[in-house]
Length: 188
Image (tube, rainbow, N blue to C red; front, side, top):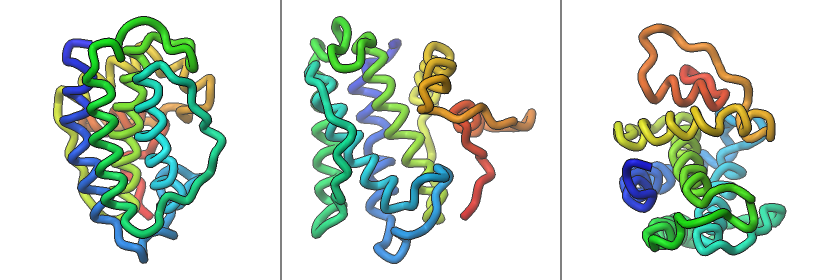
């Protein structure tokens, strides 16, 4: 990575938190660009992401199978606090060293996975709830680099759908979304 993972997460996190805070309770049953997820489901998944990637930064194994409903009293504030802890966990220089015991991937790749989920799912939620998400150029550059390295593997493992076609005038964000299998023009 050209910029530390924690710095990129610190750049992306406030935008994601703002999108999450902007979701009203009456929007929780809306569809998202992820066909298997309603807004509520995707929020719960993203909450798991910010918690589990804290553990992965510390080289701990995580259990992705737990399906907890995190959207109870105060969930927006708890999400913001957990997202801040995610950034803190990846600020430790040791978080980027070696290979993840739980995932078998270089820790730097795992950090990029956290950034990918934080950014792309923020877009999913923003689009599903009528919000706008702007992504900083340095975050987009890192995520395109991540997709160059891991996009095919992610697609084979089911993390990404087949790339969606783009137009010549597509933005960097649109191209990134397309690479993850999303239709950047999707609307609910």
